[in-house]
Length: 161
Image (cartoon, rainbow, N blue to C red; front, side):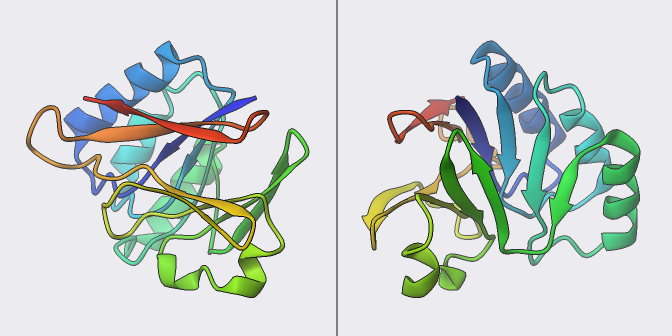
């Protein structure tokens, strides 16, 4: 199973449309958003994904009632962090802020996904793969990226755009 990982789209609709294209081309099984969608219209663009969308709310997701209503309408699965998932026998935790990834939490999961700082990160801590896809709402072509995590071999890659 392969999952797409995006973060901090910050209502950048052209980039979000490109993210949808990239993840659909990559044939991911599910997509995880690690927070800071910002506005409901971004969720509408993400509805074009071929895979179900899961995620957490970030510190810039201030229009919560609109975001929650749109998630419900479109069938997206968003929650306050931490979001715990189990897919392909892998225990996954999703947070927005990496400061929420403390050792007890990391020792209980196989994969920890986060965003917030817009910095690409692939590291092992307390036995968990910690992954942030990095910048995906930037305005400079070629410096944006989303992630793809293979849950079987536990490897993370990025797709640049």
